[in-house]
Length: 104
Image 1 (tube, rainbow, N blue to C red):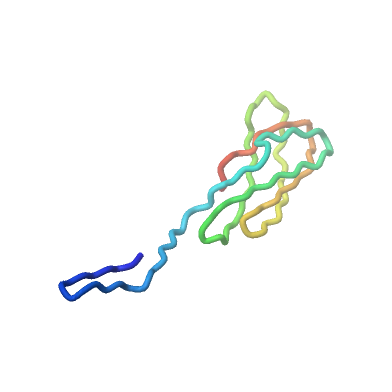
Image 2 (image 1 turned 135 degrees about the vertical axis):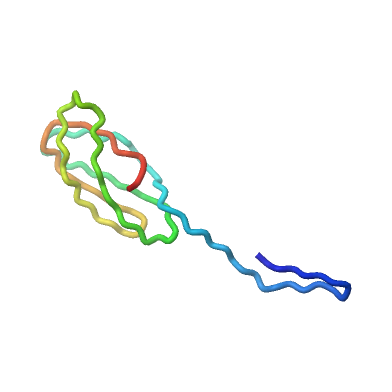
C-alpha cells in the first residue's frame, strides 16, 4: 500500500508498506486418502500444509469409517519438519481406514 496525497501544489506519495495476513494451516494432500494394510505391514502417510506463520504443530488422529470392519487404532509415530509431517505405523490387525482430510 502507498498513501497518495494531492493539493493544488502537487502530489506526494509515501513509501510502500507490505500487508501480510496470517492464516491457519491448510492441508495440501498429495496421494491417496485411504490406506489399506495387512498385518505387519509398515504404513507411511504424509501431511503437508500451507500456514502463516509457518511454525505449526501436528496431531495425527485415527478415524473409524465403518463399525463392520475389524479395525484397531494404532499409535502413529511422526516426524515434523516445517510445513510437512511424515507419519508411520505398523499394522497390527487386518484393517482399513480413511485418512481425514482436515488437519488438527
